[in-house]
Length: 607
Image 1: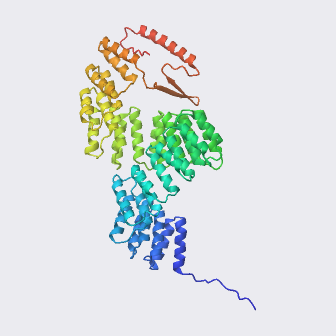
Image 2 (image 1 turned 45 degrees about the horizontal axis):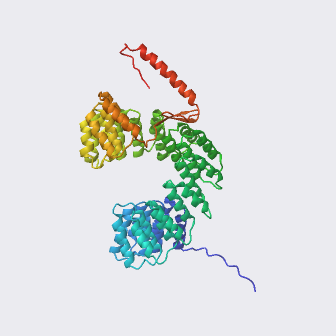
Image 3 (image 1 turned 90 degrees about the horizontal axis):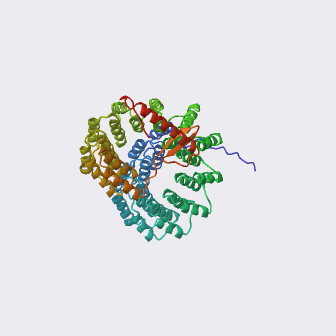
């Protein structure tokens, strides 16, 4: 019997072909191809087909085109639970949570019944809302009413949402009455307790957990790390049956934050497999501590290692660490590397670079970076305004603020911190007060304690001490903190207002502030007024008190090393030479003082 050859059919259904193309687009989002496929679907009158419509919504969502997804939904005549779920999910994936919740309400109005996926999706849409708690309760009641509590997926979502809304007690109640718990249930509950700082309760649940996975261990380790309990974190890390990159990186970051760079470095060296996040954590850790040689050495190792390429997140993290510690060398090194490799400077990276140069004292470089940013955002303007204000160029900062508004940017609360600081440095007291009051009346921004602190500094430097006191004592809607009272005390010292200084010092005492700087200011205020009894009393109090304050430090970067100095420092490696130079300078200053006693143009600086 001869075998017959069978040819594959040459005709393929247009519908099947379009479905296949849509499936491909769901894996690799391409907006141009998607629009072409959508046009063909519309031409074939398949746009009302529920199966195809749901795939179209998914595809448009992946391309960030939620308006197109909504159009597809509206063109579909018959809506079921699945297509509503797709649209709700599309809004959530594109950070349109209010629209997701509105779609959920519309769904109920037209009589389409939600399912377990609907409730899980809509709970995610409630994150970050100020009125989230009553809405979560409403969804919880609907879940109970429709019998979805037996589906472990839905209660898990409720526990997670309650926890993220800060309602851990409600999450705990639900967790305790759950008949069936899986690893997600336990992990969600432990995570909620960790985030609210209830580490003891979290650890009890962790110890009770019947079966743990790596996520369970990492939650607890991260909780201990963020609270600074590195011994407990290390203890759990040692007990872990299987450690992953997250476990190692979390522990390394923790030791960096507490300043134990030796331990952080040792763990980094022992780590079997590193990723870019780990490298960023260790480099940033050394940079934050001002350890330039170690930071640059690791940075060079990262650049030379195969398989790793710096991305925006790692660059921003390293630049932020350089800004925090004033580590200009590494920041410049990184900037040069980015220029050499023709790195694509996105706005976020440029903003971090701008802030680094500003905080490291290189204002000209900061201005150059600012001018080169093609698409400036509000963060760019704020960073440049604050950089100018920080370096005493208040009037230039205000000119930039005016330009920012002309270019269509609305100021936010951070903008006004820079603007008020600029007015302070430029001596523009009345203009600064106008900006302070316009924050709420013109821009709808309620002043925070930082803005009140700027206003106190503004009035204090101008000598308007009673206005300053009334603002702090009568007008502030919140209690003044020690920084604000100390700022006012400094103004009292500058203008020798002894009586007001006594009142302010009393307020600081009520806050139990044992800062030697405040006592020194009071002593100087009494001395300037000739009240030597007052000086004696303050000095006696200082002798009888133990101060919590760590000595103020100054630092300088020299030959790829940051040198830090404190008062009465005895730890620096060049201690003898430093004090020898200080003594030599002191002798020369005394000679200058003796030579210039009768010269009214001679300015003498004494140690």
